Length: 298
Image 1 (cartoon, rainbow, N blue to C red):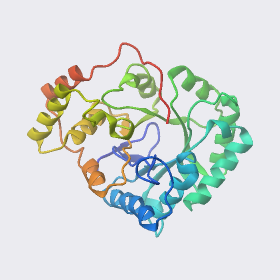
Image 2 (image 1 turned 90 degrees about the vertical axis):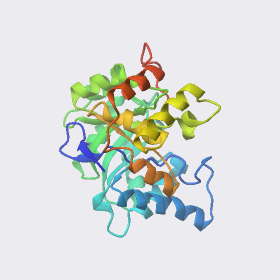
Image 3 (image 1 turned 120 degrees about the vertical axis):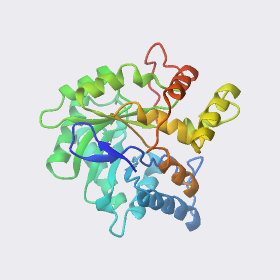
Protein backbone atom coordinates (compact mmCIF):
# COMPACT_ATOMS: atom_id res chain seq x y z
CA UNK A 1 0.00 0.00 0.00
CA UNK A 2 1.33 3.43 -0.97
CA UNK A 3 1.79 5.90 1.87
CA UNK A 4 2.09 9.65 1.76
CA UNK A 5 2.85 12.42 4.23
CA UNK A 6 -0.21 13.24 6.34
CA UNK A 7 -0.58 16.99 6.07
CA UNK A 8 2.02 18.94 8.04
CA UNK A 9 2.91 15.97 10.23
CA UNK A 10 5.96 13.77 9.75
CA UNK A 11 3.75 10.66 9.66
CA UNK A 12 3.23 8.75 6.43
CA UNK A 13 -0.27 7.28 6.18
CA UNK A 14 -1.65 4.83 3.61
CA UNK A 15 -3.59 6.50 0.82
CA UNK A 16 -6.42 4.00 1.30
CA UNK A 17 -7.45 3.26 4.88
CA UNK A 18 -10.43 1.62 6.53
CA UNK A 19 -13.67 3.26 7.66
CA UNK A 20 -15.96 1.68 10.24
CA UNK A 21 -19.37 3.36 9.87
CA UNK A 22 -21.97 0.54 10.24
CA UNK A 23 -19.40 -2.27 10.49
CA UNK A 24 -21.11 -3.50 13.63
CA UNK A 25 -23.83 -5.09 11.52
CA UNK A 26 -22.57 -4.67 7.98
CA UNK A 27 -25.55 -2.74 6.68
CA UNK A 28 -28.20 -0.98 8.74
CA UNK A 29 -26.40 -0.07 11.93
CA UNK A 30 -28.49 -2.27 14.25
CA UNK A 31 -26.31 -4.28 16.60
CA UNK A 32 -26.15 -8.04 16.39
CA UNK A 33 -25.19 -10.21 19.34
CA UNK A 34 -24.12 -13.26 17.32
CA UNK A 35 -20.39 -13.76 17.79
CA UNK A 36 -19.96 -14.78 14.16
CA UNK A 37 -21.36 -11.44 13.00
CA UNK A 38 -18.94 -9.65 15.32
CA UNK A 39 -15.99 -11.68 14.08
CA UNK A 40 -16.50 -10.80 10.42
CA UNK A 41 -15.68 -7.07 10.71
CA UNK A 42 -12.80 -7.88 13.07
CA UNK A 43 -11.31 -10.34 10.58
CA UNK A 44 -11.88 -7.92 7.71
CA UNK A 45 -10.08 -5.11 9.54
CA UNK A 46 -7.18 -7.45 10.26
CA UNK A 47 -6.96 -8.47 6.62
CA UNK A 48 -6.85 -4.79 5.73
CA UNK A 49 -4.01 -4.26 8.20
CA UNK A 50 -2.06 -7.12 6.64
CA UNK A 51 -2.55 -5.47 3.24
CA UNK A 52 -1.10 -2.20 4.55
CA UNK A 53 -4.36 -0.33 5.14
CA UNK A 54 -3.26 0.72 8.60
CA UNK A 55 -5.26 3.95 8.86
CA UNK A 56 -8.44 2.97 10.73
CA UNK A 57 -11.13 5.58 11.32
CA UNK A 58 -13.96 5.21 13.82
CA UNK A 59 -16.13 7.35 16.13
CA UNK A 60 -18.00 7.22 19.40
CA UNK A 61 -21.23 7.64 17.42
CA UNK A 62 -20.78 4.49 15.33
CA UNK A 63 -23.00 1.84 16.87
CA UNK A 64 -22.99 3.84 20.12
CA UNK A 65 -19.38 2.84 20.67
CA UNK A 66 -19.68 -0.71 19.37
CA UNK A 67 -17.56 0.02 16.29
CA UNK A 68 -14.76 1.24 18.55
CA UNK A 69 -14.98 -2.00 20.53
CA UNK A 70 -14.66 -4.04 17.35
CA UNK A 71 -11.68 -1.96 16.23
CA UNK A 72 -10.13 -2.52 19.65
CA UNK A 73 -10.42 -6.26 19.14
CA UNK A 74 -8.98 -6.02 15.63
CA UNK A 75 -5.87 -4.11 16.69
CA UNK A 76 -5.15 -6.14 19.82
CA UNK A 77 -2.35 -8.70 20.13
CA UNK A 78 0.53 -6.43 19.20
CA UNK A 79 -1.05 -4.70 16.19
CA UNK A 80 -1.63 -1.29 17.80
CA UNK A 81 1.78 0.18 17.03
CA UNK A 82 1.26 -0.45 13.32
CA UNK A 83 -2.04 1.44 13.20
CA UNK A 84 -2.78 5.12 12.58
CA UNK A 85 -5.93 5.20 14.72
CA UNK A 86 -8.53 7.95 14.48
CA UNK A 87 -11.77 8.54 16.34
CA UNK A 88 -14.28 11.36 16.67
CA UNK A 89 -16.21 13.16 19.38
CA UNK A 90 -19.87 14.05 18.85
CA UNK A 91 -20.74 17.77 18.66
CA UNK A 92 -23.21 17.22 21.52
CA UNK A 93 -20.22 16.14 23.65
CA UNK A 94 -17.95 18.97 22.51
CA UNK A 95 -17.74 20.94 25.74
CA UNK A 96 -14.33 21.07 27.42
CA UNK A 97 -15.07 18.46 30.07
CA UNK A 98 -17.17 16.18 27.88
CA UNK A 99 -14.62 16.18 25.05
CA UNK A 100 -11.99 14.91 27.47
CA UNK A 101 -14.43 12.40 28.95
CA UNK A 102 -15.48 11.18 25.50
CA UNK A 103 -11.86 10.66 24.53
CA UNK A 104 -11.20 8.64 27.69
CA UNK A 105 -14.25 6.48 26.95
CA UNK A 106 -13.14 5.94 23.36
CA UNK A 107 -9.67 4.92 24.54
CA UNK A 108 -11.24 2.42 26.93
CA UNK A 109 -13.40 0.89 24.20
CA UNK A 110 -10.45 0.78 21.80
CA UNK A 111 -8.21 -0.74 24.50
CA UNK A 112 -5.43 1.72 23.81
CA UNK A 113 -3.65 4.48 25.69
CA UNK A 114 -3.68 7.02 22.87
CA UNK A 115 -5.26 8.06 19.58
CA UNK A 116 -3.16 9.12 16.64
CA UNK A 117 -5.91 11.48 15.52
CA UNK A 118 -8.98 12.87 17.32
CA UNK A 119 -11.62 14.79 15.40
CA UNK A 120 -14.69 16.86 16.14
CA UNK A 121 -17.28 14.94 14.11
CA UNK A 122 -18.99 18.06 12.73
CA UNK A 123 -19.37 21.69 13.85
CA UNK A 124 -21.19 21.98 17.15
CA UNK A 125 -24.18 24.25 17.60
CA UNK A 126 -24.05 23.69 21.37
CA UNK A 127 -20.48 24.62 22.26
CA UNK A 128 -18.03 27.21 20.90
CA UNK A 129 -15.17 25.83 18.86
CA UNK A 130 -12.73 27.55 21.23
CA UNK A 131 -13.92 25.33 24.08
CA UNK A 132 -13.55 22.16 22.04
CA UNK A 133 -10.11 23.09 20.74
CA UNK A 134 -8.96 23.93 24.28
CA UNK A 135 -9.93 20.40 25.29
CA UNK A 136 -8.19 18.96 22.23
CA UNK A 137 -4.97 20.72 23.16
CA UNK A 138 -5.28 19.38 26.70
CA UNK A 139 -5.62 15.84 25.32
CA UNK A 140 -2.44 16.31 23.28
CA UNK A 141 -0.52 17.71 26.25
CA UNK A 142 -1.55 14.70 28.36
CA UNK A 143 -0.48 12.21 25.69
CA UNK A 144 -3.93 10.82 24.99
CA UNK A 145 -3.94 12.24 21.44
CA UNK A 146 -1.11 12.83 18.98
CA UNK A 147 -2.87 15.04 16.42
CA UNK A 148 -6.19 16.87 16.31
CA UNK A 149 -8.57 17.57 13.48
CA UNK A 150 -12.12 18.20 12.39
CA UNK A 151 -14.69 16.59 10.15
CA UNK A 152 -17.31 18.10 7.84
CA UNK A 153 -15.88 21.62 8.22
CA UNK A 154 -16.11 24.24 5.51
CA UNK A 155 -13.34 26.75 4.94
CA UNK A 156 -14.70 29.43 7.27
CA UNK A 157 -15.32 26.89 10.02
CA UNK A 158 -11.78 25.60 9.57
CA UNK A 159 -10.41 29.11 9.97
CA UNK A 160 -12.32 29.53 13.23
CA UNK A 161 -10.94 26.24 14.54
CA UNK A 162 -7.40 27.30 13.61
CA UNK A 163 -7.81 30.65 15.36
CA UNK A 164 -8.95 28.89 18.52
CA UNK A 165 -5.70 26.92 18.84
CA UNK A 166 -2.65 28.14 20.76
CA UNK A 167 -0.18 25.25 20.85
CA UNK A 168 -1.38 22.80 18.19
CA UNK A 169 -2.38 22.75 14.53
CA UNK A 170 -5.29 21.19 12.70
CA UNK A 171 -3.88 18.08 11.04
CA UNK A 172 -6.93 16.83 9.16
CA UNK A 173 -10.35 17.67 7.78
CA UNK A 174 -12.49 14.62 7.01
CA UNK A 175 -15.27 15.18 4.45
CA UNK A 176 -17.58 13.31 2.12
CA UNK A 177 -15.87 12.65 -1.21
CA UNK A 178 -16.95 10.41 -4.06
CA UNK A 179 -17.38 10.72 -7.83
CA UNK A 180 -20.88 12.12 -7.45
CA UNK A 181 -19.94 14.48 -4.63
CA UNK A 182 -16.74 16.34 -5.45
CA UNK A 183 -17.66 19.75 -4.08
CA UNK A 184 -14.87 19.75 -1.51
CA UNK A 185 -12.36 19.96 -4.37
CA UNK A 186 -13.51 23.51 -5.15
CA UNK A 187 -12.32 25.43 -2.08
CA UNK A 188 -11.87 23.06 0.88
CA UNK A 189 -9.09 21.06 -0.77
CA UNK A 190 -7.11 24.11 -2.00
CA UNK A 191 -7.37 25.76 1.41
CA UNK A 192 -6.32 22.61 3.24
CA UNK A 193 -3.39 22.13 0.86
CA UNK A 194 -2.26 25.69 1.54
CA UNK A 195 -2.47 25.09 5.30
CA UNK A 196 -0.89 21.61 5.04
CA UNK A 197 -4.05 19.98 6.39
CA UNK A 198 -4.67 16.44 5.23
CA UNK A 199 -8.04 15.80 3.61
CA UNK A 200 -9.59 12.40 4.30
CA UNK A 201 -12.53 11.54 2.09
CA UNK A 202 -15.18 9.21 3.49
CA UNK A 203 -17.87 7.15 1.69
CA UNK A 204 -15.90 7.06 -1.60
CA UNK A 205 -18.57 4.81 -3.14
CA UNK A 206 -21.45 6.96 -1.89
CA UNK A 207 -23.50 6.21 1.21
CA UNK A 208 -23.66 2.40 1.52
CA UNK A 209 -22.25 2.07 -1.99
CA UNK A 210 -25.13 4.00 -3.55
CA UNK A 211 -22.91 5.44 -6.30
CA UNK A 212 -22.66 1.98 -7.83
CA UNK A 213 -26.34 1.11 -7.46
CA UNK A 214 -27.92 0.43 -10.84
CA UNK A 215 -30.91 2.54 -9.85
CA UNK A 216 -28.78 5.62 -9.17
CA UNK A 217 -25.90 5.22 -11.61
CA UNK A 218 -26.64 6.13 -15.24
CA UNK A 219 -25.87 3.48 -17.83
CA UNK A 220 -23.37 5.72 -19.62
CA UNK A 221 -21.40 6.46 -16.46
CA UNK A 222 -21.44 2.84 -15.43
CA UNK A 223 -20.24 1.71 -18.85
CA UNK A 224 -17.44 4.31 -18.76
CA UNK A 225 -16.08 3.01 -15.45
CA UNK A 226 -16.50 -0.60 -16.54
CA UNK A 227 -14.62 0.05 -19.77
CA UNK A 228 -11.72 1.72 -17.99
CA UNK A 229 -11.67 -1.08 -15.42
CA UNK A 230 -11.45 -3.75 -18.13
CA UNK A 231 -8.49 -2.01 -19.78
CA UNK A 232 -6.56 -2.08 -16.51
CA UNK A 233 -7.69 -5.47 -15.28
CA UNK A 234 -9.43 -3.73 -12.36
CA UNK A 235 -12.95 -3.16 -11.08
CA UNK A 236 -15.08 0.01 -11.38
CA UNK A 237 -14.68 0.61 -7.63
CA UNK A 238 -10.91 0.39 -7.98
CA UNK A 239 -11.06 2.90 -10.82
CA UNK A 240 -13.10 5.26 -8.62
CA UNK A 241 -10.67 5.03 -5.68
CA UNK A 242 -7.69 5.51 -7.97
CA UNK A 243 -9.23 8.61 -9.53
CA UNK A 244 -10.18 10.12 -6.18
CA UNK A 245 -6.75 9.68 -4.60
CA UNK A 246 -4.24 9.99 -7.44
CA UNK A 247 -4.81 13.56 -8.62
CA UNK A 248 -3.80 15.41 -5.45
CA UNK A 249 -1.10 14.54 -2.89
CA UNK A 250 -3.20 15.83 0.01
CA UNK A 251 -6.13 13.37 -0.34
CA UNK A 252 -6.68 10.12 1.52
CA UNK A 253 -9.74 7.87 1.58
CA UNK A 254 -11.34 5.47 4.07
CA UNK A 255 -13.79 3.07 2.38
CA UNK A 256 -15.84 0.96 4.75
CA UNK A 257 -16.44 -2.75 4.31
CA UNK A 258 -17.03 -5.86 6.38
CA UNK A 259 -16.38 -8.06 3.35
CA UNK A 260 -12.88 -9.60 3.12
CA UNK A 261 -13.09 -9.68 -0.67
CA UNK A 262 -13.95 -5.99 -0.81
CA UNK A 263 -11.10 -4.99 1.48
CA UNK A 264 -8.70 -6.85 -0.80
CA UNK A 265 -10.27 -5.07 -3.76
CA UNK A 266 -9.81 -1.69 -2.05
CA UNK A 267 -6.15 -2.42 -1.33
CA UNK A 268 -5.42 -2.91 -5.04
CA UNK A 269 -6.93 0.40 -6.12
CA UNK A 270 -3.63 2.32 -6.03
CA UNK A 271 -0.13 1.71 -7.34
CA UNK A 272 -1.18 1.98 -10.98
CA UNK A 273 -2.12 4.94 -13.17
CA UNK A 274 -5.11 6.01 -15.18
CA UNK A 275 -4.34 7.38 -18.64
CA UNK A 276 -4.81 11.10 -19.22
CA UNK A 277 -7.76 10.53 -21.53
CA UNK A 278 -9.38 8.27 -18.93
CA UNK A 279 -9.02 10.96 -16.28
CA UNK A 280 -10.54 13.47 -18.68
CA UNK A 281 -13.45 11.15 -19.42
CA UNK A 282 -14.18 10.62 -15.73
CA UNK A 283 -13.99 14.36 -15.12
CA UNK A 284 -16.50 14.92 -17.89
CA UNK A 285 -18.87 12.23 -16.64
CA UNK A 286 -18.59 13.31 -12.99
CA UNK A 287 -17.91 17.06 -13.21
CA UNK A 288 -17.07 19.36 -10.35
CA UNK A 289 -20.07 21.41 -9.15
CA UNK A 290 -20.13 25.14 -9.70
CA UNK A 291 -20.02 25.68 -5.93
CA UNK A 292 -18.88 23.61 -2.94
CA UNK A 293 -22.47 23.07 -1.85
CA UNK A 294 -23.58 22.06 1.66
CA UNK A 295 -21.49 19.46 3.46
CA UNK A 296 -23.24 16.21 4.26
CA UNK A 297 -22.43 14.69 7.63
CA UNK A 298 -22.11 11.11 8.86
